[in-house]
Image (tube, rainbow, N blue to C red):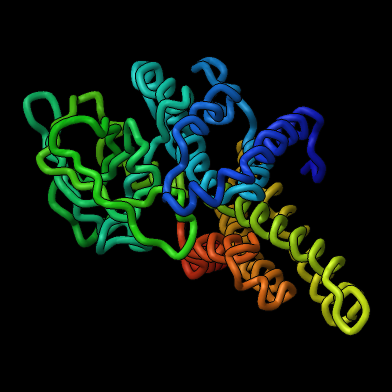
Length: 382
């Protein structure tokens, strides 16, 4: 494994960091309004960020997973809501179509995921099936050369911005002996009759990142809407989530990094008892521990991304990176708030937002409990 990144990866990340620095004044307004401005999505398209993980043959940059996690770290350090939106669009949605889609599907849909006109959605979770994704109840039945879809999806990122969603529905009758049997992935344009997007969820954090329900009421799609093979969508979903977990881990690193940067700066300037609070040993040790954990988390993220790029198994390493980095982000943002004291609890200081935004990282793309199950299963399997 290469523990350090190359010049190309650094250049990409540096360019995104420079662009993100210009968002500072827009973020509070966008978070209050609960939207990502459309012009920023368009700018990300022009910069090539939305097409980073799409192969050059399909019009994208063909960037490595290694490079993508560095870019996501920079986006998350600036604006976690935006990082989530990009990770879902450019990682899990575009990545799934690029890997599993037919030539015609790639030609039709990938340009719409990288031109900045919208952000793709991944519709797996339902009101009764979160961690137990195989128990989903959305259904698909064949109809005159096409398919009819019915069901409700919940907590869908980018639903309001999405030209399309990868929707998972079950074909046939559920089989208790094979819980994931029949689950199929469909590419569903969200402007077809029968699709409705619910109101945005009222969340603790990530307020500008859209999270909404998606309802499909007798939605008809063509026969070529199936992504991959009919009945084998569950494996496709798990492949997407493996990559998604690496991306969430990278976001966690970015959130923690920025919160700690703000805390260090504050500690050098804030004076109590006649000297900067950074001089107090208890606070210095807390910062030292947090920065050490941050460095360890970043290496776990880079290892998982490197394994993915190398074509080697990475399910366990993705789970390890996501588990450690997301829980590290909880400790780091908590420490940052504590270092700022009363000011850390106020919205005038950004660490309050990073603490709220970072809280979701232990939940989506598989909770910490699910990551422990994945890791333990891989270590104890015969």
